[in-house]
Image (cartoon, rainbow, N blue to C red; front, top):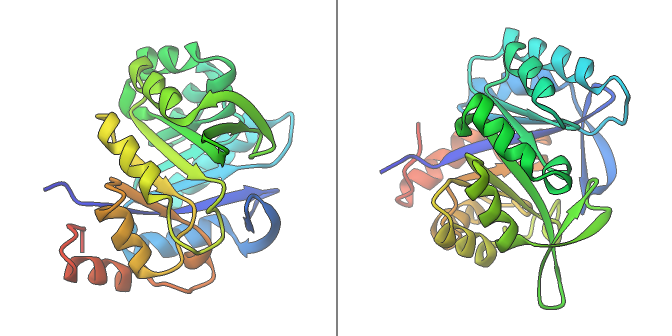
Length: 251
């Protein structure tokens, strides 16, 4: 059985790790490379770095970050934030990133997914989807959860897979930062409808939430931020808890 993955996520603004609730009220959580090194030592399976800094020098900023991370870490990492072209991805992979994450750019230009999969391979392409429950369905949002779209979660995720995405990173905006548990029902639906791995994001607060997301939510990986950044749950303790409850993890 394939091991479930634990993935700390580091949102980066102006070179610092930040974390908020429902995508707002950001607070400082430390140096991203130092945190990444700590998580690697603790047994994290992968890391995700998302640069949310608004800058015209995004490609240079991300490339410098990728090089710094690659020099200091030995586990795979995904990097994202403002990626919108084949050239962006080429620079990041050359700088040491193992995978890249695209979000708004993919919704605005779905052909980008095809282009990246064709040029680099699906295994390098993670499509992140931020969605919120609105009346009768999950609506996809852009720009850090500020701009609603006409897209719906399930149909967009299926299209991403068809275009060549290697993984889907689904963040429930309703659950993000609340520590009240993951959106397990939606995650289960995604897992049943897609054949590519699903990374769950938004809502981790207890070890039991991770057990739920792997059993009820059927996720392949679980991503969390504040509970790791602020030392609320230690990765070794979490992995032993999951193993004790029958979830396959790398110890």
